[in-house]
Length: 320
Image (cartoon, rainbow, N blue to C red; front, side, top):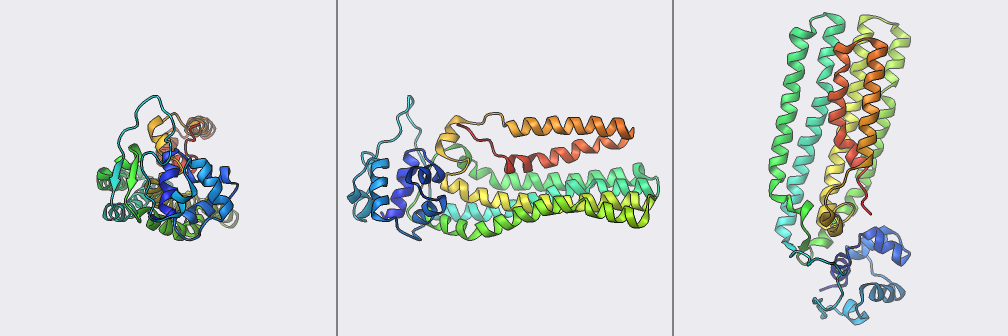
């Protein structure tokens, strides 16, 4: 077993994330990620620190002929016996990443369709007054397509649900492969998050421009929300797709919300979600009372429900 795989295994036995190990060593998370991906090697001082943290000898860490055993490193004491780890082969890991990528596409398209589903309703209401006849059925058709995509993507991921609930033991080379793919994907992930946030900010610009150039007409009443929701839909779709892909790597590496310790604790209420729905409720009541359009403001709940997973992704529950 090479040094990279030993660091991964010993870190997991201690129930530490890459960030926690990096903090103990006084290095960046990227450095730990490179060590675990066999892209670089820690210096002698770091090796000594690692041996102290993991409770193993430097020979155990450095010699490829030295294999880890149950006695090499103490597992964090627990009142309960830890359940056996689920073995994950290279083939299974690659299969999961492929399915997860397909899921990211289907889910992002579904979210996009949910958000834009209200556009036909608004446009027809403003321009023709036949929103109930055509707009409402069209909205539910788009939502039905989106829900179908969600169900399909969920069914595809069903065989891999254990990655979110059970501790895993990856075969030799799996962690290195995943770390390498994750490192290559990180710039794209960062760009996607930036793009999504920028689109959220710019979504108000078309409204300002259209109203300034055309004034308040039925056409502007149709165009303004259409451009606004369109940009929001694209931004959310980009963030959802990239976040699902990144979480796929995190699940296999058991980090950032998917560590064994967090899996064992289960799920606790996320404060961000509580705040989010309080804000949505306040907005709904405020807009409804100010505009008196109770027949339209119910759509806020539809949009809020679609955006809920995005809030979960952007503000994951941090359990201490």
